[in-house]
Length: 397
Figure 1 (cartoon, rainbow, N blue to C red):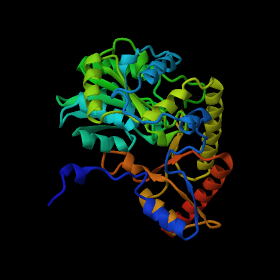
Figure 2: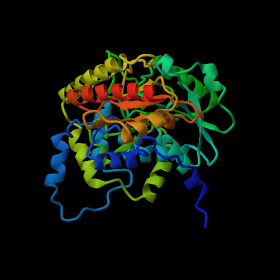
Figure 3: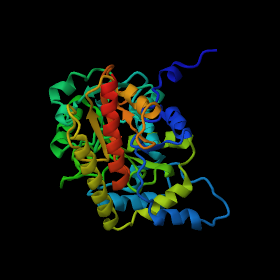
Figure 4: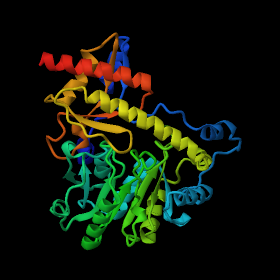
């Protein structure tokens, strides 16, 4: 018996596919600094953890398919603090941002339809698209230009009769790029002109540097039936394991259809919603401290990368990732080599080869994504080891 084409075609995660090599490395007693995955070492807020400790209901029951009313009501207040004007019934709570993206693709597209996405993009978009039967049309952006959004003409070249949406991640994973309001306004004009949806993954809203301001797709007027935002608490509260996200749109036909998909999986996790709800009123000082910490880490990793000859890297403006184009041919081979053949003082570094963040064949082969999610001491040590490893690898080739 053959497995499905969907199962054959779904992409292996470039973030997680090197885990077997990492496991072997650790079995030899070698410490790994993990810069490969966006798992922050920032502590999850006590307000969230206390919910798990103090939950005393006798039954952990099903909740509403669209999410707990209390949580959705309070989310309205959270978004109002970011000048995003919505009502409770514009929100569907999902099992992480991942489910929100899958629901969005299935609600907006028929099998075989296309979504335009600037590449490199969050690698799991590929997997979500495969699940939904959607084809991603990559809009290539370049490290040399800081992964800025291409011209309207370049975007319109990709629009055809099967195009249903343009999707962005802002701030970007894996690039750290932040699209200014004028870029979003350009996209708004395009989706209105071509009668498309616009989908914005805004998970990293809080992480914007250098005095920039994040613009949400829901800030723009005139997109009431076109704009869809997906979000998650994973990075905001350093709660990646909680798996709570949401889908938001003012298009009530779309929300009604999304709820039917939500009903098919019954409900999002109840305890995790209660924990997320408890974090909504965290004071702004919490995010100010976290932003300052990530800004410090961003500066450290960028400064260390600048010490590498012939490296191409523009300082990112948001999120907590950076893509570097290395003076090598195959970043995937280099990543495996760092785990299997190199260590310095019994330590090495793991990172994500960037080719898997592209849909265009051959793109990103000499690029890597680094996640600056470690504390200052660990990050400095990791970058010293990384630079020594890269120099040794280049000499050996």
